[in-house]
Length: 226
Image 1: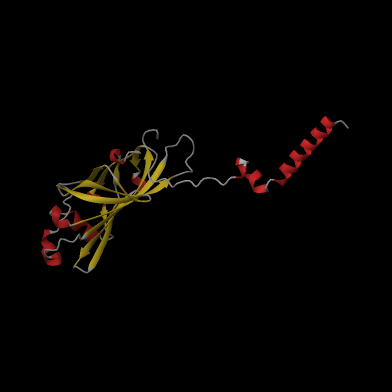
Image 2 (image 1 turned 120 degrees about the horizontal axis):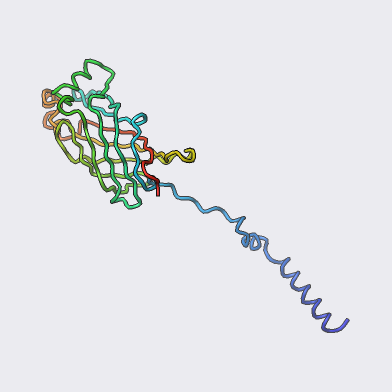
């Protein structure tokens, strides 16, 4: 064997030995298929677009103090409106309309009293509205906004804290995207001129909110999400 052939054989053998001596972890690291997938961050807002509130799957609930220590719970069954989602929090908006006459506390006599001029006066003020634009991030999928609540002919700024529950991933192609939200707010009925006949007796001069508001809405995309 000539010197040149011997040199080539030795060089090839050295290369094989070098490859065999490489740590298996380093070889595996070169294969992208073996790398762990990057953790996907949770979605904190819906895909940008305008969404219609689904009146068949949306409700507004409330809890009002009764004789200071008691609590009367009820809900409004007719809720409508739109929600605009954007990656820019300042461009997000909520517009909700509630049919005041759809109130229900599971007590016919009390419901009629609440529809009377002493409370909601539904013949004169058939709807309540909440309008807000611009949201602030709290944490995770929780956000807050300062919107205007109009009720019983009076408009007040009422902060709303809401949570984005997520998008429906099972929607069939061609059907609008769906999402849902859960919101919380609190206010005083006296600020809206409601329940004057018993506010002083039950609450005195307290400025503590005596009405807790809770809302669950399901929405479907009105325009194509972007």
